[in-house]
Amino acid sequence: MSEEKRTFEQKLGRLEEIVAALEKGDAPLADSLALFTEGTALIAQCSQELDQAEQQVVKLMKGSDGAPVELPFEEET
Image 1 (cartoon, one colour):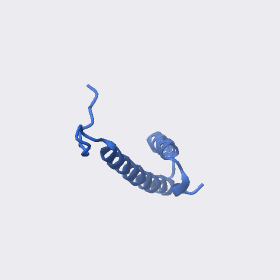
Image 2 (image 1 turned 60 degrees about the horizontal axis):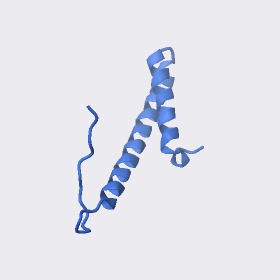
Image 3 (image 1 turned 90 degrees about the vertical axis):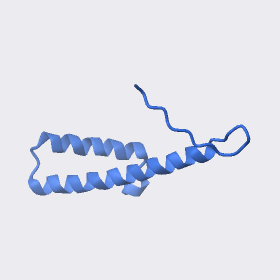
């Protein structure tokens, strides 16, 4: 499956696999570099998707007068 057709969740799953493989530390250097390269590409793709989703949420939020209102996302403490 091409990377563009993967869902966000599939990309995150693959990223978790890459991190686990790199943390294990037994892959040859060339393989580790290839995994690192793939991982950084996946991070960029996921980050872009998250940015787009945040923009959609902001556009969908409207104030009492019907005008869009941008509110900060609440952080869990």
